[in-house]
Every structure is written in C-alpha cells, then in structure tokens.
Image (cartoon, rainbow, N blue to C red; front, side, top):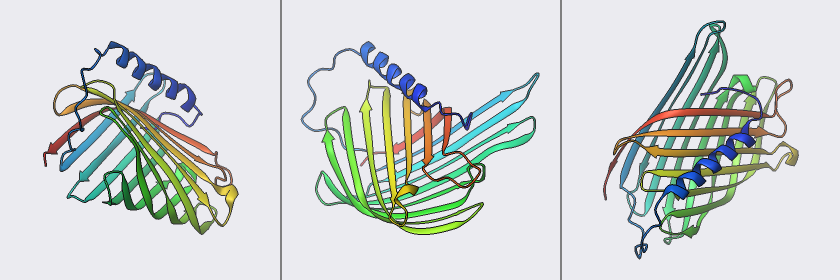
Length: 258
C-alpha cells in the first residue's frame, strides 16, 4: 500500500538490512551445505493482502493486494505478477497504482538463459496513464550458493508511455538484477533493481527497485515487509520524480513439487 510519496527509501532500506542482519545473527551456524541446492517446485502460487485503517481527527485507508505465479516446465520458466495499491484520506482518493509483469525464460545452461518480458504500469497520481515495456535479452546466474543467488539481466526493449501531458515511443536498453538470500529456514531477503535507458532521450532514464523481507508463520502463511521505489529522471510536467510504496502484508503461498 502506498503510505507516502516522500523519499523514505534510504531509511527503509537501512531497516531492511538491519532486520536481515539481526535475523542472520540469531540463526545457528549452518552445517555443511549439500552438494547442490534442491530444485525449486514445478509450480508455486502466492497472494498477498495488506490493509491499514486510521480514524479520529483524520481518517485514512490504505489497501494493497497482489499475486504471483511461477511455472517451471523444464527448460522453461514462466512468471506472472500483479500488484495493486490504493490510499484514501478523509474519503478522498489520494493514490492508486496497478502494475503487472509477465516473463518467459528459456534455460540454455544451468546459468545462462534467454528471456522475454512485458511490464505494465498505470499510476495517474504519478502522471502515468499507461506504460508498456516489451523487452528481451540474456539472463546470467552470476552466483548460486546454497543460501544465496544473484541473477543479472541485459537486453533490448521497446517503451510506449502515455502520461497526462504527452505520449512517447522509444527503443530501450534494460538492465536488471535479482538477489536472494535465505536468512534462515523460515525467512528470506530479496532485492531487485532495474534500470531502463531510453535510446531516443538518454536523459529520460528510469530506475525501479523492490526490496522485501519475508518471515514464514507456517507452511502456507508468511508476513512480508516490502518497499518499492519508482524513479523517473524526466517525469510528466507537474509531478515528482520519485514514488514509493511501503507495505506489511500477509502472504499465502501454495506449491507443487517437480
């Protein structure tokens, strides 16, 4: 849920790192790691929901919902995500955004893969009526230990964006990464930064990042602390460059083994 449009990302990222450090410090030293990590489930589906309501001198309601599906019919991996966030203050809508993503990955080797991806964003309070990004490229698993993974992406893409003032179409160069660490048997930390360079106007680059810390309550339910940042170096006239969404969510996850 969107709680603020202020640049709180630096402090929140520090909180994430401190939480991750404390959790790691309290985790007993692991025994010898297995020769190879266990394979991921063939199918996993998750949904999350968050809600905050305040009443009194001022009233506000913030709502967040999302879902994710991953299907892994070797050698392919298909992923789909969606997220919705909304805030009302004194019964007046003050923020609302919708994002979706679909990604298809074809494994070439255990570390090297080709991917195609589609992103959609609608956020009128950031001046974006609709943003479509289609991209494809190469994905490389740069680091893969028992508890940590680091994936790097690079490719070419195409952007179509319509804001409240104008519309634009341009070829793009997308760069991204995805870092994951299992802090303990029941908690994990994820960080996904993405950079998008416009070939038509290099000064109109964009940067997004998603940070999350998840702790399992049982085999199905988890609590997730997340922070999303969207930065546009050249936002629509009259709008700020940075938007953030911070949320504490309850997550339900189901999976099916290989």
